[in-house]
Every structure is written in structure tokens, then in C-alpha cells.
Length: 334
Image: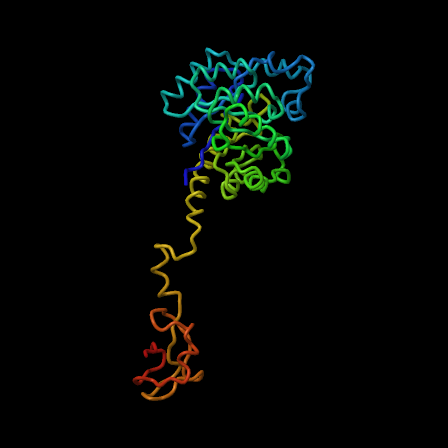
């Protein structure tokens, strides 16, 4: 099995500041994540001046400004993204970004991003889906706010426009920041895989690392999680993001869980073979037995260690003659 692909989602937690963005790349690299991901957009291309903020955005940033005004402050230029990709390349971590409009798709394609990430809000955006399929042979599709039927339709569009189904990973997701645990619905990861026949993953917006780790046990091959330099910073996503220390804990926990999942074959492992003789039991004499005496329920019992005749042969021995004298607690031989 391939290792779980872990995406450290910087998103817009740079607050429009390049120094913060580069620090986020460093934190992602140091955590052991496979990739660091940002969000690329031209605010006026995807948000009208009449668009309202989400409730969680109002809670974190107030209601005085519009969604457009809020997002404008988080926008980085294409040249800045070129600089960030170069910096990530220098540090040795894969650089990714999610495009939120058609010009950003073209830019990220030109920048050499290895696969495209479709955010939850674009699952029902037909022109966007077509363009993503045409530009990226490998895709990750987030599915917050969707029904299974909507996800199926989006997959149809992607495949019809050049994307191979086996090159698409569908991420279960809930777009509330933070997502209440009661709404995480992790079993949907298995539903998506079973019903749509695709590889699945999880884009996690719950607090902490538990849900993301559990997703791996449910079959997620990609895990995406927001992180920040400081959960107390201004901005819409910081408080629902992991601290640098939590991000390191997440990566370690996922690596441990994927090792622990094992092969699925039920058999003794190498580490426990040495315990079998100690923990299992054998047939032993419950009292002194003379040679030629018949074995009975009165003179046989079961005790450790397990290097003698298995107690599973209890009825095989009853009525047989002792081949020699046995002392109390001595292993029975035939």
C-alpha cells in the first residue's frame, strides 16, 4: 500500500503576508507532511460585491466588511505564488495550491503544479470542472456541502472531459469551521468509495487531530488539514487550524496508524511468537500418574507453559495409557 498522502493546508492563513507564508512552508516541511497547499484566486473573479460572509467568517472577522473585502486582503499575486513555489522547492516540500477561478487554473497549470485540487464550493461549477479536467491529469475533489448524487455528477463531468477516474481522489469534507464532531460523518468516506468506485480521503475541519487519524483507519489515502502559525491571529481560519505542534502530532499519528493497519491477514506476528509458549497452556498431570494408568479428567489438567500437548486434544487423551510415570504439573507426553 502507498503511504497516506498528507497535505498541510496553509490556505489563507498567511493573511496576505509573504513572510508568514514562507514560515508556513517551513512549518509544513518540518512536520513531515508530504505537501503544503495554499489557495490561489483573483477575488473579483469569484466573489461578487453582494456575497455575504459565512457565519463562521463573521464570527472571526466581524460583519462590517463584505466577503469580497475580506478575501481581497488575503489575496496573493501570481508572482508571489511563483516565489512561494521556488521557496518550497528549496526546502524540499511539494508545493500545491487550490485555484478558485479560471485564470488561476491556467496559472497553476503553467506553474507546474502536479495535480489539481477542486474545492468543495466548485463541485457544482460546470465550467470550472471542465477546465480542471482539461488541465490536470490528476485531481483531488473535495465534497463538502454535497450529496452523493452531486459528487457522482461532478465525477462524470471530469471523466467526460479527460480525467481518468483512477486518477481522481474524492475527499469527504464538511465545510463548517470548525466542524462539530457530530457532523464529521466519517463513515461517508467508505460510502463514497463503495458507491462511486473511487479512492477516497478526508479534508478535515474539526478541532484537533482525532477525526483525521480515524479517517486513515477508514481507508483515506489523502488527508488534508489546515494549520497556522498562531491560532490567535486575525483571519477567518486560524482558530479552526492546527498549531505547528499539533501538525507534527498529526503526521506522526497518521504514520503510526497506517503501520498499525497492517496486512489484514490474521496470523501471529513475529513480535508475539515468543509469547506463545509463555501465554498458552498444555496438558499436564494434576497429580502423580503411574505408567500404564489411564488418563482421566481427574488426573489431567491444563496449565502453562504452552510447549506441550495442546488442550485442544483433551478428548484425544482421555482413556489412553500413560507411557511412563508423570509427576504433578509435569507435561504429558504420548
